Image (cartoon, rainbow, N blue to C red):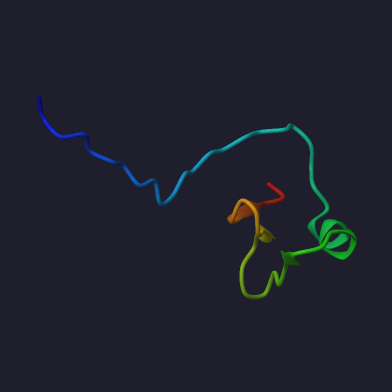
Length: 60
């Protein structure tokens, strides 16, 4: 019988459409652990420590 192999997942990508516009400026002001600088990057970056994740949110 072959040895068991372990898989380490490093990155998961998902996309969702909510059919509603998101006000990124307002969301950034009202939410903790958020980075939003539209001159540098068009999306809002929302980070969690546990589980360690980063979610990118775009207004389009």
